[in-house]
Image (tube, rainbow, N blue to C red; front, side, top):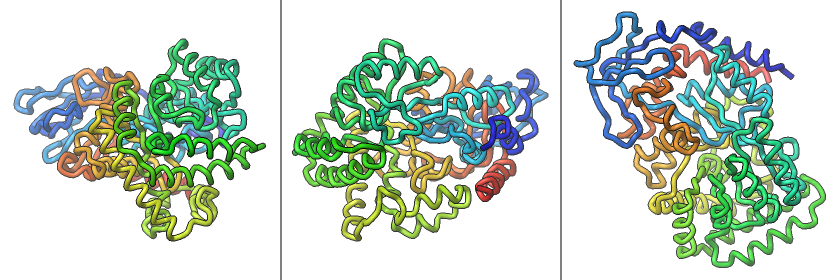
Length: 485
């Protein structure tokens, strides 16, 4: 297994020479001239603008005819191009030993300058941050959480198990002391432990987010202060006209499980059946009341539509022949094969068709929540089920538009909204003077077609300019790294 220093050395080779050491902020000046600025505040696009970056900050934005470009500036011709904020993926699994060497270049090459890791190796998180901030490593801004689950965790290798109120409070204290930015709650947390965790998190000033545990309802999680719900977990169930019956079935399915494998087998079988039954008994009235509650409580949604789509359409040849598979390690690619995945075994054609209808309902729910004022976060769950670090974030934005968001609103799920959610809006998330220079230069207008976020010509990461040739090299090196594993 590679050490942290080896990971850093590998990643340094992906960076521009200028990224190996921090530059003097007064000497590192960029000017993007005559560009159309899409600042992601919701304001209309502003053509014929010049943006000055000094060091790691945006120091001036103004009409090209009025802005004086410093003599020592490196000038980037922006005519016909579009400048947007750096993108965030708010649900990834990348801060794991040996994975950053392929994942970080893929993020940066796709304009993803920030990520929220939902189950981070906290010691690795600290080291990677130091390497990135010190200029020794090219990578996105990192926010990392500690996973907490019930006494038999679904993922025992990464989750802190809790069984009662005392262990829940201790888990929160431990995670915060070790540097977690938030607590990720998972599906099997017992009811008393969940509410104790929520209370302790509030007392210690740390956010908790994640799944809706099976022992509580989505409305209870919202009322308890859970800041975001991932994957629309618990929402189909909460909108079912026969919710009590379905909850009873879930409880009976897992009560006799003795280990993680039994939990996976029993729980996933009943959850698949429950989702279908909830879909068939969907109550519009319950949904409307729930979404109103989410909006009132400020409960965000990170729906990870790309992974839900993959689960529903995995037998489609577009997935198994995706050219982006070359960037993914063989062992991970193999784990995605539906004939091997324990979550998808023995699926019939009839059942596959039903799952596709359920996925369409997910898009409808996103549209309904959005209209109700529920805030959304772009998130992918990379690297699960044909979800590709960096690349799949653009797919997620396309799915938001299909769900009913405008291109600007979809763009904001990966820019303004993550910055607001994380309390970083004074630093990142929009293209404004004084903010950090995390920027993406596009060849076409994403407000006309959200797919144009893929047409990247340059990325600026914390003031460091990475142009097209170097972005292509990042991907090539990531492909080589993946082929060796």
